[in-house]
Amino acid sequence: MSPLPPKHILSKSTFMRGCKCPKSLWLYKNQFDLRDEESATQSSIFIRGTNVGLLAQQLFPGGVDASPVDAFHYQQSVADTEQYIAEGRQVIYEAAFQYEGVLCAIDLLVQQNGKWYAYEVKSSTRVKPEFIQDVALQYYVITNAGIALEEIFLVHINNEYVRQGALDIQELFNIVSVKKEAEAQQPFIINKVPELKAIALQTNMPLVTMGDHCSRPYPCDFHGYCSQGLVPKAAEQREERILEYEIRDFVKQLSWPIYYMDFETYMVPVPEYDGHWPYRQVPFQFSVHKQCSNMDALEHHFYLAENNGDPCPQFIQQLIACIGTEGTIVVYNKTFENLRLEELKADYPEFESAITAIQARIVDLMVPFRKKHYYLNAMQNSYSLKVVLPALVPELGYDEMMIADGGNASTAFYNLRFENDEAKIKETRQALLDYCALDTLGMVKVLEKLKCI
Image (cartoon, rainbow, N blue to C red; front, side):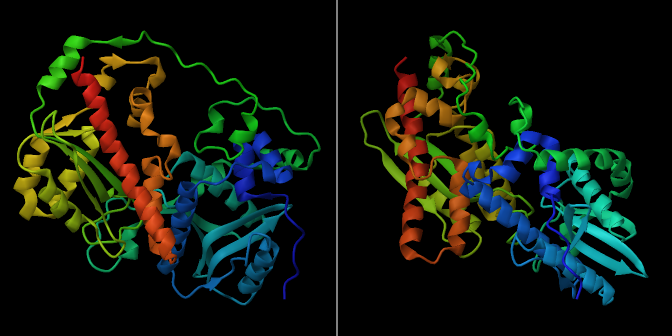
């Protein structure tokens, strides 16, 4: 059995963290408890990425798994990888290597005709610049640990793949050689590794001013700590204004009855149903508030899918049934709903005429705010519905909602398939209904304000 190496100083993830911000690296290594709490959306993204990595193993079936039992046992994973190589194993999943205190694991290590090939899997649909740096460190560690790589590849999702029947793993993934790019980055890696190891081990926290690196290419999980005590930068103030003529012109195009409509969607990297593609926006919920006249009470119609199959057929049938054939349909951001309807029209040609009729009736409530026909400084130069609603109708109480934005809604719905607690399922489904209903009710209130001008 191969001996365990000493505890590493840097891993691939902490190296990438240090390249982005040395202060974040130091905090991660020395003050880990100061990290921001991970959101449900972030957890879901991580889980989906992990699932993509497991699926990619089917590109080279029959391999041996070197992954550790948990994040604290990577040294055992390094020793296991060494043992598997010595045994002549030709496909190793999560092969781990360590060189001079730097640890990395590669998703797939494959030997063919006596030569080694490495594959790093990403759930993205393209090769991003940060992936090259990521792979360059892996190339540095693996080759210095004694494995001569004939090639190193990035495996990413093929966004042109459309599922029909059983999942086609070969079609789902694109495999791109990045060896030349990884080799070109070796001088940078060689210089950066000792610098970041020294930062990780030093006593004092580096002083780094907050900036774009705090959110790009991904948000830092020490943002809350670093922003403590900072006075928020004042948003640029524009002159508050209400352009009566333009607003009245917008209102004139509306006709009774008025339907206020909102969709919720989720997306996953691996298409689950026939006709779906990676990261397709799958509609699973709608809310419609109907108002026949200024004097009539609101009617509320809604749909929330079960987690037992493709929600699209029921979604469009329920929507057609409740939306009527006359009157204006008010949405906020027409482009989003219209794209979903176009996709459903392509999927279900039997509903093409009904969907086209719905599209012809849609009016975009976002227009007066995007064009600054109605502007309050409380909107902070944004026309997002999540900013406009609190500014115009703060009494709606978004802050008190269990689910208060679309990202959390999609994550909550997706995660219901893994939930066994019936009380939790019932609570989450009710929270989803409340959230979506509040969006359409908010549009009612906003339009009432516009109609009073």
